[in-house]
Image (cartoon, rainbow, N blue to C red; front, side):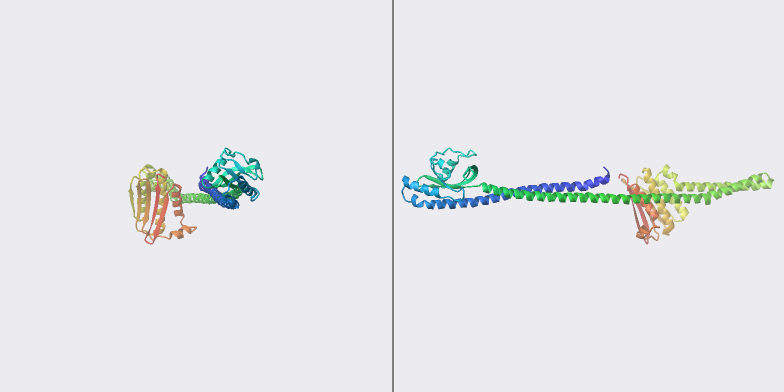
Length: 452
C-alpha cells in the first residue's frame, strides 16, 4: 500500500470507527429508552386498571351492602347476594366471582361449572396457587394479583389482573379481574413503533456515514490526484532546470576551453612550429628559438593552471580527499583572491565525517551563494561558517551587502534561479534553506538533520 493510500485509510478509518461507535451507542440508548417507555406506559396502564377494578368492586360491594349489613347470614340471604353479583357484568369479559375461605367457588357467572368446586389447590398455567393467593390477599384486607385465567370470549388463557376484598360478615372472598391481553397488545404496538423509529434513525445514520466516508475518500482521492499532478509538474520543471543547468555548465566549460585553453594551445603550437624552424638556422635564430621555447613553457604552465581551475570548479579534489571543511576553506581563500572581497571561514564541531551527498550539496550551495554575492551584493566582507551540533549540520553565508527583495525574486520568472537551485538541492537530501535579506546584508543558512 502506497503512502497516499495509507493517508486516506488513516483519515477514513477513524471516521468509520467513530460512526460505528456512535451507531452502537445510539442503538443501545434507543433500546434502553424503549424499555423505559414501555415500563412507564405499562405502569400507567396498570394504575388505570387498578383504579378501574377498585371502582367495580366498590359498586359490587354497595350492591349487596343491604344484605351483608342486615345481620342475616341464612342461605336465602346469601343466595340473593350471589344472584345480584352474578347479574353484574361490564364489558364482554367482566364479571364478579366469590370464594369461601377454604377455596370453594360460590359464584362464577362465566364458568358456572366451577360453582361448588374446591379450588384450594388449583394452579394457573404458570404453576401459581392462584386461589390460595387471592384468599390470602383478601384476608389481609384486599389486594391485587396478576395471574393467568381462561378468557370467556376467546376460551384461551390470558394474563389477568384480579382484585379481591373480604366479605367479613359471611367469610367470603369477593373480587373481579380485567384481562391484560389488550394492554400487552398496546405495549407491543408501542414497542414495534419505537423499533421502527430506531431502525429508521440507524438507517439514516448509516446513509450519512456512508456519504461521509465516500466524501472523505473522494476528497482524499481528488487531493491525491491533484498532488500527483502537482508533483509531476514539479518533477518536470526540476528535470527541465537540471537540463538547463547542465547546458549552462557545458556552455561555460566550452567558453573556458575555447577562450582560454584553446587559444593558449594554438599560441603554444605556433611558437613550437616557429621554434622548430629557427633551430635549423644560424646561432641567432637558435637563440630566438630558445627564447620562444621558454615563453612556450610559461604558456604551458598557464594552461595547466587554467585546467586545474576548471577541474576544481567541476569537482574539487579537496572535497573527496580531505572533506567539506578544508574544501570550503580553500573556496573562501580562492574567492577572496579572485573577487577581492575577504571571506572569513569558521568551522565548529565534528564536521569531518559527513556523508558524501551532504558534503557535495553544502559545497555547491556555498559556491552558488558566493557567486551571487560577487554578482549582486556589493559586499565588503563575507562570513562563511560550517557548524555541527549533535546530528544537525548548518552552513551559513552572510554578507554586508545591499541585500534584495526575497519576495520579488521568488515570483520573478527570470530571477532567483540560483536560490531555487539551492532550495531544491537541500530538499533533495531532506534539508532546509532559509534566506534573510535586508538593506544591511543577506544571510543564507542551509541546515540538515543527519539522523533524519
